[in-house]
Image (cartoon, rainbow, N blue to C red; front, side, top):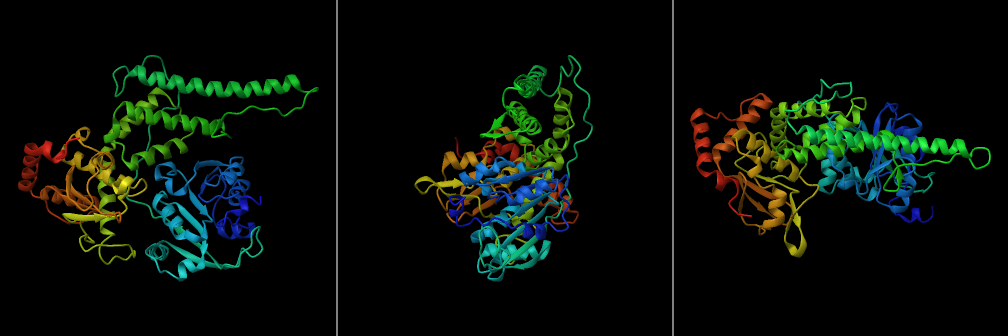
Length: 485
């Protein structure tokens, strides 16, 4: 353990502190994320108290070897973890590195599902000396959504001692008005020859389901072989022999194996059906949550077709959510906002302006050229593009994703270029400016927000709507992409 303890940010959480962290939290049957798991003190406590599952993140190779025997490591670097992988969890319990705890907690807040509890330790000075924007932002989130408790020097008797004063932060992420329900699934197995004329080729779906069933069968046969080997060797050879299926050198349970197979199956289906136009971030989160929480629903042809029908049928709600996420992200970045976030006078606090700014979109790449931020807000902009295609009747298949555009066109820093429905301009500090090419579409966007939020923002007249439609009918090739790839 000495080699592991050379990590300057590793301070294993004492059991007494873990008990304080989880006071009042229901553990039995719940799913948790421990994003700074270390050697697994919090993981062990949660499992011993009856949690249904614990997911973790850890980038130290020595610590990962320890954790792999206790829980499922879903990502090495917590900052690479995305919301669609944890949309089914109930709470995030964390003891992040004290050197940048504010950034860890803010990332947890950004990817946590609605209603999720976030419980975290941090150095008390992080909250007392709010000299940075991230610390100011964290304090604002706590004031709006949680509480802080002073635990004093609770690590003075731990495995690795420190006299630092520690604070306990408890947050609850508020829910949203949008909710997707997956109902009407079939609990029986498939009957022969059905859905011949459906959303997707019968043969393709049948082949996928057959492969899934065969893979699970092989898993079961492997376990059965291990039991038979123990029976044959008992009495003259050491008992307790076993075989296992592993992933990244760690054993994977039968349920985890089935869920991983199902997630891969859904990705395969979406790719085959070219369903990128429907696959917003919200849909990815819902699919993950569905697979994780509906363990008893068979992965059958009938249910695959049922899911596809739901995806098509709830398209309007998901596109509304995509528009609303952009609206909220931009309006919270107005010049003087209550969240203590970096803001700009360009952005308004109550509507989407014709020209707006979003940060954490681009970064300096190879040779100083523009690259996109993998974990930034670019997915929100991609979803907005899909939603605008939906409300204007534009074929999304003819559009270029912003990630592809940046990677292949490599726009010059600080210069306006046309992409999709916008003119865009990126800056090395990470911000990107967006300007609607058609001002009437800007009005139409705000009209949709008015309907979603239930209050008037902008009245889009029939005359303006006809003007917008005429504009797109005449200039569609130009508006989709003015730079040919």
